[in-house]
Image 1 (cartoon, one colour):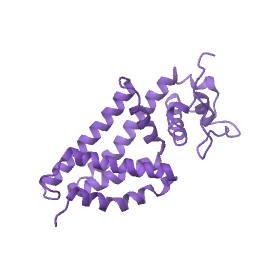
Image 2 (cartoon, helix red, strand yellow):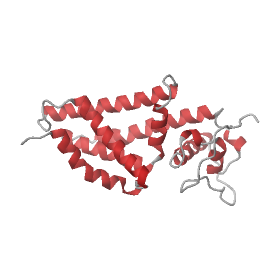
Image 3 (tube, rainbow, N blue to C red):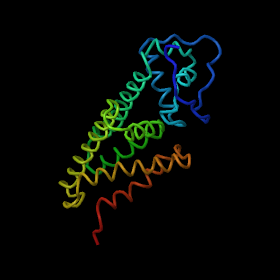
Image 4 (cartoon, rainbow, N blue to C red):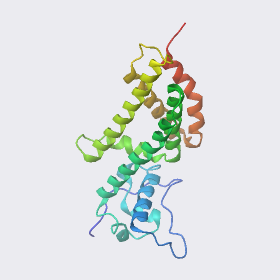
Length: 223
């Protein structure tokens, strides 16, 4: 078969591949179908590592034949490239909107932190996709995209923390780069807890409770 996938089937769960809906399907444009395929991969990643998401599972998820999938992408690599592009654009838009609202630096930092967590709560497969790629041997185009995304985001956080220092909201001695890593790490810790205990639905509320603790850590001991 021209496009036979060698991966293992995704394990069953809340986001397992579903049967095609009965009756005629709405006819989608090529761009709409490609977007649907990308979202199917993100949804499947909630319950299976990227290495376990087969092209047949993707086709089943959106209710098309395996062959039809490859009328929109030449191969599985192209599908994953589109997934990484979507993650970068969508996460970037979510946190970018939070940055763009402006206001006091610490208020903006809180808004960005919560926007990041809210995005992950809506798309819990995204962290699994990103972490998987970062753990692979270096050198792939996809990994370069992921590293660029993370590095750029961390740089924006560091600049925001620098603005908070300049405004007297954070200690002048605070290391901006380390603080930015700490903010990102807090998001990752929340995601890990949600993944282990199935708490994605409460992820944003957990982030709201975590923020005061994170802020205290950034401010340091002022006694």
